[in-house]
Image 1 (cartoon, one colour):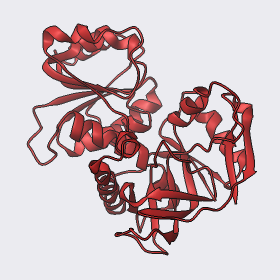
Image 2 (tube, helix red, strand yellow):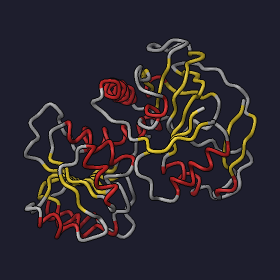
Image 3 (cartoon, one colour):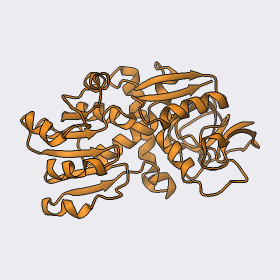
Amino acid sequence: MKAFGVTDNQFDSFVEFDKKREHPTGRDLLVKIEGISINPVDIATRKKISEELSDPKILGYDGYGLVEEVGEGVENFNVGDKVFFAGDYTRDGSYQEEELIDERIVAHAPKKTSIEKSVAMPLVTLTASELLFEKLHLNPAADNRKKTILIINGAGGVGSIAIQLAHLAGLRVIATASTDEKAKWVKDLGADLVVNHHHDLVQQIHDLGINTVDYILGLSDNDPHWQEIVTLIKPFGTFATITNLRDSQIMDLKQKSIDFAWEWMFTKAKFKLDSMSTQGAYLEKLANGLDSGMIDSTVTKVFHGFNLENIKKATQLVEAGHMMGKVVVIG
């Protein structure tokens, strides 16, 4: 079968190659891939390759497709089911015609929503869900109207769904956006207030009549905003991030007794935690939310044709770092 991978950390190392077909065992599904989405983690993973690989590395951590075979331990899926998922960082990704994936991190695909709208959403939704409901410990059924969250990089992939989930949970949502187009995007997704992260966040938020916020999500480089984060977070608040801290010092949060949390969506599958199944559950809720219209897909660019050329074009868009929403490739 055809697969697409990289042999070193350079963009030009993308290649198409033949891979031997595998068969599922245990709780694995074999899924015929019909669509993928490109994420920043794909680029980051490629750039971490330190030496030339003899076997190409298959990236890709969003997939949509048809279940072709099931392992003997599979409980929740049958051959012929349409599914979607984000994947497992320790295994080959979705840049291939068929993929093995553990059923616990898979969900039935939306029934009324297109492939392109569906496949754009798994990784970012799992990331946003774990940030909000596991790291910030938000209860979406509680009355959260008095709580305020600042989402830095609101127009990005994770930010675009985090805004929606926080809004549905009842929080007052402040999102950052750097252009008028992106400001409209985040407002349409449910942000109550918008500020520009290219300007002084503290001054802008104080001008809105808000002194401090309960929660902050750092979804881009934290270092340029670190002192703003330290100033704006409320004592006993929570700061959670998906990106690294290079120069910033977590100790700066100590005097305010701030809870600090990392989020990496692949942790549960990497360490085969019992909580892996929560990801399948989050994605089942996502499927229902997309079909009911409660959740809007954040896809903004679609390439038709599951081939090397389109994967490279889509990767270039994401790697440029200016994407609003998500880019997908469908067969």
